[in-house]
Image 1: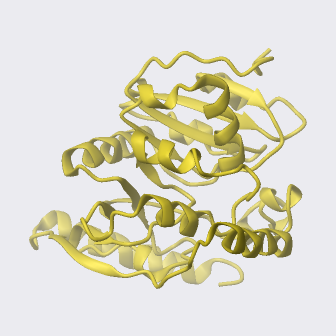
Image 2: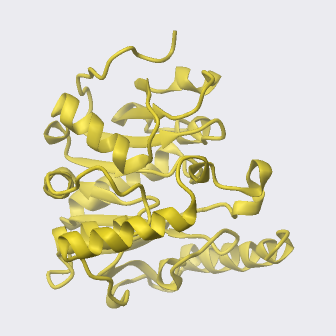
Length: 273
């Protein structure tokens, strides 16, 4: 039996990767490579089967719900998040491996950031243009990171979860946690360009649809966000960039430029682009 019968977990590592997962989750990629032993991997499975990949995680529990809804349930049941230095809250389809995860955890600590995200490659889905990888930088400061793969300092994540009521399933979550956490004025929020991940297009997924739509459709998610803004006084704002650390033009940067170019060419071949 791979799925636990109750929510009970004792942290073992400094870092946590948390996700709410369906049948198409990229768990085997996340656990690939050097660094896997440096983070706990906790997943809440919202499907009806028992995927083989669950053998790769440290804790798995069956519960219907979106990523932050299930994270809220995990936090309230275990009160374990304060044990961790930082927490990555990851969409189950993000293409990233263990070495890149560990690099992000260590950069958050070194830069003393409150929340960060990796940059997105040009051959995948990009919802906010400022999150696209810029090879000219190691990282860029911003006022907004997207909710599909934010990495939080544990104290700032707890600050948000103490306010979050568990109702909003997804749409607008990033605006909400930024309203609560703040940090843009202190340059505590960043996009990490030296770590790039891929966010697959919806049409690449089984049936051409996101699995979260089986839980709550897009229209209802938007309506719930509108209700949340009225109830809690949350506001949307324009994503902005505030500079960052340049990457000197060396072979590494040139390599990033070439990779970005070939990813752009690959993107042009994706059906529906």
